Amino acid sequence: MINKLVDKIKQKDAPIVVGLDPMLDYVPNFIKEEAFNQFGETLEGAGEAIWQYNKAIIDATHDLIPAVKPQIAMYEQFGIEGIKAFNKTVEYCRQKDLVIIGDIKRGDIGSTSKAYAVGHIGRVQVGKNSFCPFKEDFVTVNPYLGSDGVNPFIDVCKEEKKGIFVLVKTSNPSSGEFQDRLIDNRPLYEIVGEKVNMWGSECMGDEYSYVGAVVGATYPKMGETLRKIMPKAMILVPGYGAQGGKAEDLKCFFNEDGLGAIINSSRGIICAYKNDKYKDKGITEMNFADASRMAVIDMIEDINSAIK
Amino acid sequence: MINKLVDKIKQKDAPIVVGLDPMLDYVPNFIKEEAFNQFGETLEGAGEAIWQYNKAIIDATHDLIPAVKPQIAMYEQFGIEGIKAFNKTVEYCRQKDLVIIGDIKRGDIGSTSKAYAVGHIGRVQVGKNSFCPFKEDFVTVNPYLGSDGVNPFIDVCKEEKKGIFVLVKTSNPSSGEFQDRLIDNRPLYEIVGEKVNMWGSECMGDEYSYVGAVVGATYPKMGETLRKIMPKAMILVPGYGAQGGKAEDLKCFFNEDGLGAIINSSRGIICAYKNDKYKDKGITEMNFADASRMAVIDMIEDINSAIK
Image (cartoon, rainbow over all chains, first blue to last red; front, side, top):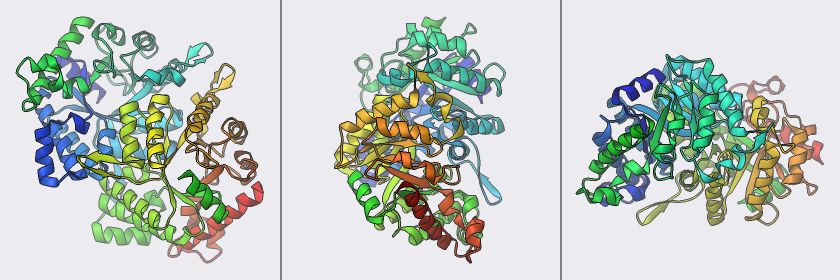
Protein backbone atom coordinates (compact mmCIF):
# COMPACT_ATOMS: atom_id res chain seq x y z
CA MET A 1 0.00 0.00 0.00
CA ILE A 2 2.95 2.36 0.63
CA ASN A 3 4.00 1.68 -2.98
CA LYS A 4 0.50 2.56 -4.17
CA LEU A 5 0.58 5.76 -2.14
CA VAL A 6 3.98 6.76 -3.54
CA ASP A 7 2.87 5.92 -7.10
CA LYS A 8 -0.29 7.97 -6.76
CA ILE A 9 1.60 10.95 -5.36
CA LYS A 10 3.94 10.80 -8.36
CA GLN A 11 1.20 10.21 -10.90
CA LYS A 12 -0.95 13.11 -9.70
CA ASP A 13 2.06 15.27 -8.82
CA ALA A 14 0.28 16.05 -5.59
CA PRO A 15 1.82 15.19 -2.21
CA ILE A 16 -1.43 15.99 -0.46
CA VAL A 17 -4.26 14.32 1.38
CA VAL A 18 -7.74 15.69 1.98
CA GLY A 19 -8.88 15.38 5.57
CA LEU A 20 -12.51 14.33 5.66
CA ASP A 21 -13.34 15.69 9.13
CA PRO A 22 -16.96 16.69 8.62
CA MET A 23 -18.08 18.67 11.65
CA LEU A 24 -21.80 19.29 11.37
CA ASP A 25 -21.18 23.06 11.40
CA TYR A 26 -19.22 22.68 8.17
CA VAL A 27 -22.05 20.99 6.26
CA PRO A 28 -24.03 23.41 4.03
CA ASN A 29 -27.56 24.06 5.26
CA PHE A 30 -29.28 22.64 2.20
CA ILE A 31 -27.62 19.25 2.80
CA LYS A 32 -28.55 19.27 6.47
CA GLU A 33 -32.15 20.24 5.65
CA GLU A 34 -32.47 17.41 3.15
CA ALA A 35 -31.02 14.90 5.59
CA PHE A 36 -33.13 16.15 8.50
CA ASN A 37 -36.29 16.14 6.35
CA GLN A 38 -35.63 12.50 5.62
CA PHE A 39 -34.42 11.27 9.02
CA GLY A 40 -35.23 14.08 11.47
CA GLU A 41 -32.73 15.90 13.65
CA THR A 42 -31.34 12.57 14.79
CA LEU A 43 -28.05 10.71 14.79
CA GLU A 44 -29.20 9.07 11.56
CA GLY A 45 -29.89 12.50 10.09
CA ALA A 46 -26.42 13.66 11.13
CA GLY A 47 -24.85 10.57 9.57
CA GLU A 48 -26.71 11.13 6.31
CA ALA A 49 -25.69 14.82 6.23
CA ILE A 50 -21.97 14.17 6.69
CA TRP A 51 -22.04 11.30 4.18
CA GLN A 52 -23.72 13.44 1.48
CA TYR A 53 -21.27 16.26 2.24
CA ASN A 54 -18.27 13.92 1.92
CA LYS A 55 -19.62 12.35 -1.26
CA ALA A 56 -19.89 15.69 -3.04
CA ILE A 57 -16.35 16.67 -2.00
CA ILE A 58 -14.94 13.32 -3.10
CA ASP A 59 -16.73 13.61 -6.46
CA ALA A 60 -15.26 17.07 -6.97
CA THR A 61 -11.65 16.26 -5.98
CA HIS A 62 -10.86 12.56 -6.41
CA ASP A 63 -9.12 12.89 -9.78
CA LEU A 64 -6.65 15.42 -8.34
CA ILE A 65 -5.62 13.72 -5.10
CA PRO A 66 -3.86 10.50 -4.11
CA ALA A 67 -5.47 10.00 -0.73
CA VAL A 68 -8.06 10.97 1.86
CA LYS A 69 -7.82 10.98 5.64
CA PRO A 70 -11.16 10.59 7.40
CA GLN A 71 -10.88 11.50 11.11
CA ILE A 72 -12.96 8.81 12.81
CA ALA A 73 -13.80 10.96 15.86
CA MET A 74 -15.98 13.19 13.68
CA TYR A 75 -18.08 10.12 12.81
CA GLU A 76 -17.80 8.24 16.11
CA GLN A 77 -19.33 11.21 17.96
CA PHE A 78 -22.63 10.30 16.29
CA GLY A 79 -22.43 6.68 17.49
CA ILE A 80 -23.37 3.78 15.23
CA GLU A 81 -25.00 6.07 12.65
CA GLY A 82 -21.82 8.13 12.42
CA ILE A 83 -19.71 5.02 11.99
CA LYS A 84 -22.01 3.88 9.19
CA ALA A 85 -21.25 7.21 7.47
CA PHE A 86 -17.54 6.56 8.03
CA ASN A 87 -17.84 3.16 6.38
CA LYS A 88 -19.83 4.55 3.45
CA THR A 89 -17.19 7.23 2.98
CA VAL A 90 -14.36 4.69 3.05
CA GLU A 91 -16.21 2.42 0.62
CA TYR A 92 -16.86 5.28 -1.79
CA CYS A 93 -13.21 6.35 -1.67
CA ARG A 94 -12.18 2.78 -2.47
CA GLN A 95 -14.42 2.86 -5.54
CA LYS A 96 -12.57 6.02 -6.61
CA ASP A 97 -9.27 4.18 -6.05
CA LEU A 98 -8.10 6.65 -3.40
CA VAL A 99 -5.68 5.58 -0.67
CA ILE A 100 -7.50 5.77 2.67
CA ILE A 101 -5.71 6.88 5.81
CA GLY A 102 -7.95 6.24 8.81
CA ASP A 103 -7.05 8.85 11.40
CA ILE A 104 -7.93 6.73 14.40
CA LYS A 105 -4.94 7.31 16.73
CA ARG A 106 -5.45 3.94 18.43
CA GLY A 107 -2.82 2.20 20.55
CA ASP A 108 -3.10 -0.17 23.51
CA ILE A 109 -1.43 -3.22 25.03
CA GLY A 110 -0.63 -6.12 22.69
CA SER A 111 -3.82 -8.16 22.42
CA THR A 112 -5.91 -5.01 22.32
CA SER A 113 -3.81 -3.29 19.67
CA LYS A 114 -4.15 -6.50 17.68
CA ALA A 115 -7.95 -6.18 17.82
CA TYR A 116 -7.78 -2.60 16.52
CA ALA A 117 -5.32 -3.65 13.80
CA VAL A 118 -7.37 -6.56 12.48
CA GLY A 119 -10.56 -4.50 12.62
CA HIS A 120 -9.22 -1.48 10.78
CA ILE A 121 -6.53 -2.67 8.36
CA GLY A 122 -6.75 -6.45 8.56
CA ARG A 123 -9.23 -9.27 8.80
CA VAL A 124 -11.07 -10.51 11.83
CA GLN A 125 -11.87 -14.20 12.08
CA VAL A 126 -15.38 -15.42 12.91
CA GLY A 127 -15.52 -19.21 12.81
CA LYS A 128 -14.42 -20.26 9.30
CA ASN A 129 -14.97 -16.79 7.83
CA SER A 130 -12.91 -13.64 7.91
CA PHE A 131 -14.10 -10.06 7.49
CA CYS A 132 -12.59 -6.60 6.95
CA PRO A 133 -14.91 -4.42 9.03
CA PHE A 134 -13.37 -0.99 8.41
CA LYS A 135 -11.23 -1.32 5.26
CA GLU A 136 -8.74 1.53 5.67
CA ASP A 137 -5.33 1.27 3.93
CA PHE A 138 -3.37 3.07 6.63
CA VAL A 139 -4.19 4.05 10.19
CA THR A 140 -2.57 6.46 12.64
CA VAL A 141 -1.18 4.91 15.84
CA ASN A 142 -0.35 6.43 19.24
CA PRO A 143 3.04 5.23 20.53
CA TYR A 144 2.71 6.03 24.26
CA LEU A 145 2.51 2.33 25.21
CA GLY A 146 5.76 1.41 23.40
CA SER A 147 6.58 -1.42 21.01
CA ASP A 148 3.99 -3.83 22.47
CA GLY A 149 1.29 -1.45 21.34
CA VAL A 150 2.73 -0.82 17.87
CA ASN A 151 3.98 -4.27 16.84
CA PRO A 152 0.51 -5.84 16.41
CA PHE A 153 -0.25 -3.14 13.84
CA ILE A 154 3.06 -3.85 12.08
CA ASP A 155 2.30 -7.59 12.00
CA VAL A 156 -1.00 -6.88 10.26
CA CYS A 157 0.72 -4.42 7.88
CA LYS A 158 3.09 -7.17 6.79
CA GLU A 159 0.29 -9.69 6.26
CA GLU A 160 -2.02 -7.32 4.44
CA LYS A 161 0.50 -4.95 2.83
CA LYS A 162 -1.09 -2.06 4.67
CA GLY A 163 0.60 0.77 6.57
CA ILE A 164 0.59 2.94 9.68
CA PHE A 165 1.59 6.47 10.63
CA VAL A 166 2.91 6.68 14.19
CA LEU A 167 2.36 9.95 16.09
CA VAL A 168 5.80 11.47 16.59
CA LYS A 169 5.36 15.25 16.88
CA THR A 170 1.75 16.38 16.67
CA SER A 171 0.62 19.71 15.23
CA ASN A 172 -1.27 21.08 18.25
CA PRO A 173 0.02 23.94 20.45
CA SER A 174 0.52 21.82 23.59
CA SER A 175 2.20 18.90 21.82
CA GLY A 176 5.48 19.97 23.41
CA GLU A 177 4.22 19.37 26.94
CA PHE A 178 5.46 15.79 26.81
CA GLN A 179 6.82 15.32 23.27
CA ASP A 180 9.49 18.05 23.58
CA ARG A 181 10.80 17.08 27.01
CA LEU A 182 14.51 16.30 26.94
CA ILE A 183 15.77 12.79 27.50
CA ASP A 184 19.58 12.50 27.44
CA ASN A 185 19.51 15.99 25.93
CA ARG A 186 17.20 14.96 23.12
CA PRO A 187 13.48 15.57 22.91
CA LEU A 188 11.09 12.65 23.32
CA TYR A 189 9.84 13.06 19.74
CA GLU A 190 13.33 12.22 18.46
CA ILE A 191 13.40 9.07 20.58
CA VAL A 192 10.01 8.09 19.15
CA GLY A 193 11.29 8.99 15.65
CA GLU A 194 14.22 6.62 16.10
CA LYS A 195 11.83 3.85 17.05
CA VAL A 196 9.73 4.58 13.96
CA ASN A 197 12.86 4.25 11.86
CA MET A 198 13.71 0.95 13.55
CA TRP A 199 10.17 -0.45 13.29
CA GLY A 200 10.01 0.65 9.66
CA SER A 201 13.29 -0.89 8.60
CA GLU A 202 11.71 -4.32 9.02
CA CYS A 203 8.89 -3.72 6.58
CA MET A 204 10.02 -1.76 3.56
CA GLY A 205 8.12 -1.09 0.36
CA ASP A 206 10.16 -0.22 -2.75
CA GLU A 207 11.24 3.25 -1.63
CA TYR A 208 9.44 3.93 1.63
CA SER A 209 8.47 1.89 4.66
CA TYR A 210 5.06 0.59 5.67
CA VAL A 211 5.69 2.47 8.94
CA GLY A 212 5.34 6.22 8.53
CA ALA A 213 5.16 9.07 11.01
CA VAL A 214 2.95 12.02 11.87
CA VAL A 215 4.83 15.32 12.23
CA GLY A 216 2.96 18.64 12.37
CA ALA A 217 3.51 21.33 9.71
CA THR A 218 3.48 23.78 12.60
CA TYR A 219 6.92 22.55 13.72
CA PRO A 220 9.15 22.73 10.61
CA LYS A 221 12.51 22.81 12.44
CA MET A 222 11.62 19.63 14.26
CA GLY A 223 10.43 18.24 10.93
CA GLU A 224 13.89 18.85 9.48
CA THR A 225 15.55 16.82 12.23
CA LEU A 226 12.97 14.07 12.07
CA ARG A 227 13.32 13.82 8.28
CA LYS A 228 16.96 12.82 8.85
CA ILE A 229 16.21 10.45 11.71
CA MET A 230 13.56 8.58 9.68
CA PRO A 231 14.80 8.76 6.05
CA LYS A 232 12.56 5.93 4.85
CA ALA A 233 9.38 6.97 6.64
CA MET A 234 6.59 8.66 4.74
CA ILE A 235 5.69 11.66 6.89
CA LEU A 236 2.02 12.55 7.21
CA VAL A 237 1.97 16.29 7.89
CA PRO A 238 -1.16 17.79 9.48
CA GLY A 239 -1.46 21.45 10.39
CA TYR A 240 -1.10 23.10 6.95
CA GLY A 241 -3.55 25.94 6.36
CA ALA A 242 -6.18 26.37 9.05
CA GLN A 243 -3.80 25.34 11.86
CA GLY A 244 -1.14 27.81 10.67
CA GLY A 245 1.44 25.73 8.75
CA LYS A 246 2.75 27.50 5.63
CA ALA A 247 3.95 26.01 2.32
CA GLU A 248 7.43 27.54 2.57
CA ASP A 249 7.91 25.62 5.82
CA LEU A 250 7.16 22.28 4.23
CA LYS A 251 10.31 21.72 2.19
CA CYS A 252 12.12 20.21 5.17
CA PHE A 253 9.60 17.37 5.42
CA PHE A 254 10.57 16.08 1.95
CA ASN A 255 13.59 14.06 0.88
CA GLU A 256 15.82 15.06 -2.02
CA ASP A 257 13.80 12.78 -4.29
CA GLY A 258 10.92 15.24 -3.82
CA LEU A 259 9.01 12.53 -1.98
CA GLY A 260 8.61 11.35 1.57
CA ALA A 261 5.83 13.59 2.83
CA ILE A 262 2.12 13.95 2.34
CA ILE A 263 0.51 17.16 3.53
CA ASN A 264 -2.97 17.09 4.98
CA SER A 265 -5.55 19.81 4.80
CA SER A 266 -9.01 19.33 6.26
CA ARG A 267 -10.91 22.53 6.94
CA GLY A 268 -9.01 24.42 4.20
CA ILE A 269 -10.46 22.05 1.59
CA ILE A 270 -13.79 20.86 2.89
CA CYS A 271 -14.80 24.31 4.18
CA ALA A 272 -13.32 26.26 1.25
CA TYR A 273 -16.79 27.52 0.36
CA LYS A 274 -16.74 29.66 3.51
CA ASN A 275 -13.47 31.30 2.45
CA ASP A 276 -13.84 34.82 0.98
CA LYS A 277 -11.24 33.94 -1.63
CA TYR A 278 -13.66 31.50 -3.25
CA LYS A 279 -16.82 33.46 -2.57
CA ASP A 280 -15.40 36.03 -5.00
CA LYS A 281 -15.25 33.28 -7.66
CA GLY A 282 -18.97 32.63 -7.70
CA ILE A 283 -19.04 30.08 -4.91
CA THR A 284 -22.14 29.82 -2.75
CA GLU A 285 -23.26 27.12 -0.36
CA MET A 286 -24.97 25.36 -3.25
CA ASN A 287 -21.77 24.73 -5.23
CA PHE A 288 -19.56 24.26 -2.15
CA ALA A 289 -17.76 21.26 -3.64
CA ASP A 290 -16.48 23.38 -6.54
CA ALA A 291 -14.72 25.50 -3.92
CA SER A 292 -13.13 22.36 -2.50
CA ARG A 293 -11.81 21.55 -5.99
CA MET A 294 -10.42 25.07 -6.39
CA ALA A 295 -8.80 24.81 -2.95
CA VAL A 296 -7.18 21.48 -3.84
CA ILE A 297 -5.75 22.96 -7.05
CA ASP A 298 -4.45 25.98 -5.12
CA MET A 299 -2.98 23.79 -2.40
CA ILE A 300 -1.12 21.56 -4.87
CA GLU A 301 0.30 24.62 -6.63
CA ASP A 302 1.21 26.29 -3.35
CA ILE A 303 3.07 23.23 -2.08
CA ASN A 304 4.74 22.25 -5.34
CA SER A 305 6.01 25.79 -5.90
CA ALA A 306 7.47 25.81 -2.40
CA ILE A 307 9.15 22.41 -2.49
CA LYS A 308 10.43 22.24 -6.07
CA MET B 1 -19.80 10.13 38.90
CA ILE B 2 -16.55 9.87 40.89
CA ASN B 3 -18.68 10.18 44.04
CA LYS B 4 -20.90 7.37 42.82
CA LEU B 5 -17.85 5.22 42.09
CA VAL B 6 -16.38 5.87 45.56
CA ASP B 7 -19.75 5.20 47.22
CA LYS B 8 -20.19 1.93 45.37
CA ILE B 9 -16.68 0.79 46.24
CA LYS B 10 -17.42 1.46 49.92
CA GLN B 11 -20.89 -0.04 49.83
CA LYS B 12 -19.79 -3.29 48.21
CA ASP B 13 -16.41 -3.29 50.01
CA ALA B 14 -14.87 -4.15 46.67
CA PRO B 15 -12.27 -1.89 45.04
CA ILE B 16 -12.48 -3.87 41.82
CA VAL B 17 -13.72 -3.57 38.27
CA VAL B 18 -14.52 -6.40 35.88
CA GLY B 19 -12.95 -5.94 32.46
CA LEU B 20 -15.45 -6.97 29.79
CA ASP B 21 -12.93 -7.77 27.04
CA PRO B 22 -14.72 -10.60 25.26
CA MET B 23 -12.33 -12.15 22.79
CA LEU B 24 -14.22 -14.67 20.71
CA ASP B 25 -11.89 -17.44 21.91
CA TYR B 26 -13.10 -16.81 25.45
CA VAL B 27 -16.77 -17.33 24.62
CA PRO B 28 -18.05 -20.84 25.48
CA ASN B 29 -18.84 -22.95 22.44
CA PHE B 30 -22.53 -23.37 23.22
CA ILE B 31 -23.01 -19.59 23.12
CA LYS B 32 -21.12 -19.28 19.85
CA GLU B 33 -23.10 -22.15 18.33
CA GLU B 34 -26.39 -20.56 19.30
CA ALA B 35 -25.33 -17.16 17.92
CA PHE B 36 -23.93 -18.67 14.71
CA ASN B 37 -27.06 -20.79 14.21
CA GLN B 38 -29.11 -17.61 14.36
CA PHE B 39 -26.86 -15.22 12.42
CA GLY B 40 -24.24 -17.42 10.73
CA GLU B 41 -20.48 -17.13 11.18
CA THR B 42 -20.74 -13.40 10.52
CA LEU B 43 -19.91 -10.15 12.26
CA GLU B 44 -23.51 -10.11 13.48
CA GLY B 45 -23.04 -13.62 14.86
CA ALA B 46 -19.85 -12.53 16.63
CA GLY B 47 -21.63 -9.50 18.09
CA GLU B 48 -24.48 -11.65 19.37
CA ALA B 49 -22.04 -14.17 20.91
CA ILE B 50 -20.05 -11.58 22.86
CA TRP B 51 -23.21 -9.81 24.00
CA GLN B 52 -24.77 -13.04 25.35
CA TYR B 53 -21.45 -13.91 27.00
CA ASN B 54 -21.26 -10.48 28.68
CA LYS B 55 -24.89 -10.60 29.76
CA ALA B 56 -24.44 -13.89 31.61
CA ILE B 57 -21.31 -12.59 33.37
CA ILE B 58 -23.02 -9.34 34.36
CA ASP B 59 -26.03 -11.27 35.69
CA ALA B 60 -23.73 -13.45 37.79
CA THR B 61 -21.55 -10.68 39.24
CA HIS B 62 -23.34 -7.30 39.25
CA ASP B 63 -24.40 -7.41 42.90
CA LEU B 64 -20.79 -7.88 44.02
CA ILE B 65 -19.02 -5.23 41.97
CA PRO B 66 -19.08 -1.44 41.69
CA ALA B 67 -18.03 -1.12 38.07
CA VAL B 68 -17.26 -2.71 34.71
CA LYS B 69 -14.65 -1.77 32.13
CA PRO B 70 -15.53 -2.81 28.59
CA GLN B 71 -12.48 -2.59 26.29
CA ILE B 72 -13.93 -1.10 23.10
CA ALA B 73 -11.28 -2.63 20.81
CA MET B 74 -12.73 -6.09 21.46
CA TYR B 75 -16.05 -4.86 20.04
CA GLU B 76 -14.73 -2.44 17.41
CA GLN B 77 -12.80 -5.27 15.75
CA PHE B 78 -16.19 -6.64 14.61
CA GLY B 79 -17.19 -3.31 13.06
CA ILE B 80 -20.69 -1.91 13.44
CA GLU B 81 -22.05 -5.21 14.76
CA GLY B 82 -19.39 -5.27 17.45
CA ILE B 83 -20.15 -1.71 18.46
CA LYS B 84 -23.83 -2.61 18.73
CA ALA B 85 -22.79 -5.31 21.21
CA PHE B 86 -20.73 -2.70 23.09
CA ASN B 87 -23.77 -0.43 23.34
CA LYS B 88 -26.03 -3.27 24.46
CA THR B 89 -23.48 -4.19 27.13
CA VAL B 90 -23.22 -0.59 28.37
CA GLU B 91 -27.01 -0.23 28.42
CA TYR B 92 -27.42 -3.47 30.37
CA CYS B 93 -24.79 -2.41 32.91
CA ARG B 94 -26.63 0.90 33.36
CA GLN B 95 -29.80 -1.03 34.15
CA LYS B 96 -27.84 -2.88 36.82
CA ASP B 97 -26.63 0.49 38.17
CA LEU B 98 -22.97 -0.35 37.57
CA VAL B 99 -20.42 2.40 36.91
CA ILE B 100 -19.14 2.03 33.34
CA ILE B 101 -15.53 2.76 32.47
CA GLY B 102 -15.15 2.77 28.69
CA ASP B 103 -11.59 1.65 27.98
CA ILE B 104 -11.23 3.60 24.76
CA LYS B 105 -7.77 5.22 25.14
CA ARG B 106 -8.71 8.09 22.84
CA GLY B 107 -6.81 11.36 22.61
CA ASP B 108 -6.29 13.83 19.76
CA ILE B 109 -5.98 17.55 19.08
CA GLY B 110 -8.59 19.83 20.67
CA SER B 111 -11.59 19.78 18.32
CA THR B 112 -11.12 16.06 17.73
CA SER B 113 -10.81 15.16 21.40
CA LYS B 114 -13.96 17.18 21.92
CA ALA B 115 -15.78 14.96 19.41
CA TYR B 116 -14.66 11.82 21.26
CA ALA B 117 -15.65 13.38 24.59
CA VAL B 118 -19.16 14.40 23.58
CA GLY B 119 -19.73 11.06 21.84
CA HIS B 120 -18.61 8.87 24.74
CA ILE B 121 -19.34 10.72 27.99
CA GLY B 122 -21.30 13.77 26.84
CA ARG B 123 -24.01 14.85 24.44
CA VAL B 124 -23.67 15.55 20.76
CA GLN B 125 -25.89 18.23 19.26
CA VAL B 126 -27.91 17.56 16.09
CA GLY B 127 -30.04 20.58 15.24
CA LYS B 128 -32.27 21.26 18.25
CA ASN B 129 -31.72 17.80 19.75
CA SER B 130 -28.88 16.30 21.74
CA PHE B 131 -27.93 12.64 22.06
CA CYS B 132 -25.64 10.47 24.21
CA PRO B 133 -24.41 7.93 21.66
CA PHE B 134 -22.16 5.76 23.86
CA LYS B 135 -23.21 6.47 27.46
CA GLU B 136 -20.08 5.54 29.42
CA ASP B 137 -19.51 7.15 32.85
CA PHE B 138 -15.72 7.30 32.57
CA VAL B 139 -13.33 6.84 29.66
CA THR B 140 -9.58 6.26 29.47
CA VAL B 141 -7.56 8.97 27.72
CA ASN B 142 -4.09 8.90 26.12
CA PRO B 143 -2.03 11.97 27.14
CA TYR B 144 0.64 11.95 24.38
CA LEU B 145 -0.78 15.11 22.74
CA GLY B 146 -0.67 17.15 25.97
CA SER B 147 -3.27 19.40 27.61
CA ASP B 148 -5.00 20.32 24.32
CA GLY B 149 -5.96 16.69 23.92
CA VAL B 150 -7.10 16.17 27.51
CA ASN B 151 -8.91 19.43 28.31
CA PRO B 152 -11.91 18.81 26.02
CA PHE B 153 -12.57 15.62 27.99
CA ILE B 154 -12.29 17.55 31.26
CA ASP B 155 -14.71 20.21 30.00
CA VAL B 156 -17.28 17.52 29.26
CA CYS B 157 -16.59 15.87 32.65
CA LYS B 158 -17.46 19.14 34.38
CA GLU B 159 -20.66 19.62 32.38
CA GLU B 160 -21.87 16.06 32.73
CA LYS B 161 -20.28 15.08 36.06
CA LYS B 162 -18.45 12.28 34.34
CA GLY B 163 -14.79 11.25 34.68
CA ILE B 164 -11.62 10.15 32.90
CA PHE B 165 -8.61 7.99 33.63
CA VAL B 166 -5.46 9.29 31.96
CA LEU B 167 -2.81 6.75 30.95
CA VAL B 168 0.20 7.41 33.16
CA LYS B 169 2.12 4.13 33.50
CA THR B 170 0.61 1.27 31.55
CA SER B 171 0.80 -2.38 32.60
CA ASN B 172 2.45 -3.82 29.48
CA PRO B 173 6.10 -5.01 29.37
CA SER B 174 7.32 -2.32 26.94
CA SER B 175 5.53 0.58 28.67
CA GLY B 176 8.92 1.78 29.89
CA GLU B 177 10.23 2.39 26.38
CA PHE B 178 8.95 5.96 26.49
CA GLN B 179 7.13 6.27 29.83
CA ASP B 180 10.21 5.48 31.96
CA ARG B 181 12.67 7.74 30.11
CA LEU B 182 14.25 10.31 32.41
CA ILE B 183 13.44 13.99 32.04
CA ASP B 184 15.36 16.21 34.50
CA ASN B 185 16.17 12.97 36.32
CA ARG B 186 12.52 11.98 36.63
CA PRO B 187 10.66 9.46 34.50
CA LEU B 188 8.09 10.71 31.99
CA TYR B 189 5.30 8.92 33.87
CA GLU B 190 5.94 11.16 36.88
CA ILE B 191 5.70 14.25 34.69
CA VAL B 192 2.40 12.96 33.31
CA GLY B 193 1.29 12.12 36.86
CA GLU B 194 1.93 15.71 37.93
CA LYS B 195 -0.22 16.95 35.07
CA VAL B 196 -2.98 14.55 36.10
CA ASN B 197 -2.82 16.00 39.59
CA MET B 198 -2.99 19.53 38.19
CA TRP B 199 -5.84 18.76 35.76
CA GLY B 200 -7.69 16.96 38.53
CA SER B 201 -7.40 19.74 41.10
CA GLU B 202 -9.79 21.82 38.99
CA CYS B 203 -12.61 19.29 39.09
CA MET B 204 -12.91 17.62 42.44
CA GLY B 205 -15.68 15.38 43.67
CA ASP B 206 -16.15 15.04 47.46
CA GLU B 207 -13.01 12.99 48.11
CA TYR B 208 -11.51 12.22 44.74
CA SER B 209 -11.14 14.05 41.44
CA TYR B 210 -13.04 13.55 38.19
CA VAL B 211 -9.58 13.06 36.66
CA GLY B 212 -8.06 9.70 37.54
CA ALA B 213 -5.04 7.82 36.26
CA VAL B 214 -4.14 4.42 34.84
CA VAL B 215 -1.14 2.77 36.55
CA GLY B 216 -0.34 -0.90 35.95
CA ALA B 217 -0.36 -3.40 38.83
CA THR B 218 2.79 -4.80 37.28
CA TYR B 219 4.76 -1.74 38.45
CA PRO B 220 4.04 -1.40 42.20
CA LYS B 221 7.12 0.70 43.05
CA MET B 222 6.14 3.24 40.46
CA GLY B 223 2.59 3.04 41.79
CA GLU B 224 3.87 4.01 45.23
CA THR B 225 5.50 7.17 43.88
CA LEU B 226 2.53 8.03 41.69
CA ARG B 227 0.13 7.59 44.61
CA LYS B 228 1.98 10.44 46.36
CA ILE B 229 2.17 12.63 43.25
CA MET B 230 -1.58 12.33 42.61
CA PRO B 231 -3.17 12.03 46.08
CA LYS B 232 -6.67 12.91 44.86
CA ALA B 233 -6.68 10.81 41.72
CA MET B 234 -8.56 7.54 41.65
CA ILE B 235 -6.08 5.06 40.18
CA LEU B 236 -7.41 2.47 37.75
CA VAL B 237 -5.04 -0.48 38.05
CA PRO B 238 -4.94 -3.01 35.20
CA GLY B 239 -2.58 -5.97 35.15
CA TYR B 240 -3.76 -7.90 38.23
CA GLY B 241 -3.99 -11.65 37.70
CA ALA B 242 -3.46 -12.79 34.14
CA GLN B 243 -0.86 -10.08 33.43
CA GLY B 244 1.12 -10.97 36.56
CA GLY B 245 0.17 -8.32 39.15
CA LYS B 246 -0.21 -9.78 42.69
CA ALA B 247 -2.49 -8.66 45.53
CA GLU B 248 0.39 -8.03 47.94
CA ASP B 249 1.77 -5.50 45.47
CA LEU B 250 -1.45 -3.49 45.42
CA LYS B 251 -1.34 -1.83 48.82
CA CYS B 252 0.79 1.03 47.52
CA PHE B 253 -1.92 2.09 45.05
CA PHE B 254 -4.31 2.90 47.91
CA ASN B 255 -4.42 5.91 50.22
CA GLU B 256 -4.57 5.61 53.99
CA ASP B 257 -8.35 5.91 53.83
CA GLY B 258 -8.31 2.49 52.15
CA LEU B 259 -9.60 4.11 48.97
CA GLY B 260 -8.12 5.67 45.86
CA ALA B 261 -7.62 2.65 43.64
CA ILE B 262 -9.80 0.30 41.65
CA ILE B 263 -8.22 -2.93 40.47
CA ASN B 264 -9.22 -4.38 37.12
CA SER B 265 -9.32 -8.02 36.17
CA SER B 266 -10.51 -9.11 32.76
CA ARG B 267 -9.43 -12.59 31.75
CA GLY B 268 -9.19 -13.76 35.38
CA ILE B 269 -12.92 -13.14 35.82
CA ILE B 270 -14.53 -13.61 32.42
CA CYS B 271 -12.44 -16.70 31.60
CA ALA B 272 -12.52 -18.17 35.11
CA TYR B 273 -14.34 -21.23 33.78
CA LYS B 274 -11.13 -22.28 32.00
CA ASN B 275 -9.17 -22.15 35.27
CA ASP B 276 -8.50 -25.56 36.86
CA LYS B 277 -9.23 -24.07 40.26
CA TYR B 278 -12.88 -23.66 39.32
CA LYS B 279 -13.15 -26.79 37.21
CA ASP B 280 -12.62 -28.68 40.46
CA LYS B 281 -15.69 -26.92 41.87
CA GLY B 282 -18.12 -28.34 39.35
CA ILE B 283 -17.65 -25.66 36.71
CA THR B 284 -18.10 -26.61 33.07
CA GLU B 285 -18.55 -24.47 29.99
CA MET B 286 -22.30 -24.54 30.59
CA ASN B 287 -22.16 -22.77 33.97
CA PHE B 288 -19.19 -20.55 33.07
CA ALA B 289 -20.76 -17.47 34.67
CA ASP B 290 -20.81 -19.18 38.07
CA ALA B 291 -17.04 -19.44 37.79
CA SER B 292 -16.90 -15.68 37.11
CA ARG B 293 -18.86 -15.10 40.31
CA MET B 294 -16.50 -17.36 42.29
CA ALA B 295 -13.53 -15.53 40.78
CA VAL B 296 -14.97 -12.14 41.75
CA ILE B 297 -15.49 -13.32 45.35
CA ASP B 298 -11.94 -14.69 45.45
CA MET B 299 -10.52 -11.50 43.94
CA ILE B 300 -12.28 -9.26 46.47
CA GLU B 301 -11.05 -11.42 49.33
CA ASP B 302 -7.52 -11.58 47.91
CA ILE B 303 -7.29 -7.82 47.53
CA ASN B 304 -9.01 -6.86 50.77
CA SER B 305 -6.83 -9.21 52.77
CA ALA B 306 -3.73 -7.71 51.21
CA ILE B 307 -4.66 -4.04 51.60
CA LYS B 308 -6.35 -4.04 55.02
